[in-house]
Image (cartoon, rainbow, N blue to C red; front, side, top):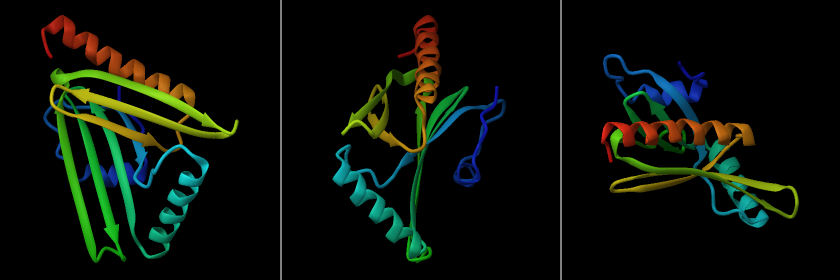
Length: 156
């Protein structure tokens, strides 16, 4: 089972060396400019993203689930790459104790979708871009399968 990756996700994964036998099962992109679910906050985030884009910058955050671990990959660039920051967080699949997804709607049409993953030591909450409700359910299902497998194998 292998996930379809966007070109930006594939570029981010160049920062990570997959282990022998490791397969990508699920990959989603988070919104690095997220300020909140209120319409004015989303408008400010959209403006910031636009300004970064026209100056050659970006903020990209990917949550990648493999058959061995969970990866959080971050990439930031400012002014056509004059300043770059790249980071990779690896979370053992055995240490994942909680995962979830939520959708908030404001003013009947402004939607915000959020996922979170909690390990034994850290909690990551990410606003997700371009994700539908069925994709949120798929994420929750993948993470539920991982957590249940941990229960049966004695992890976490």
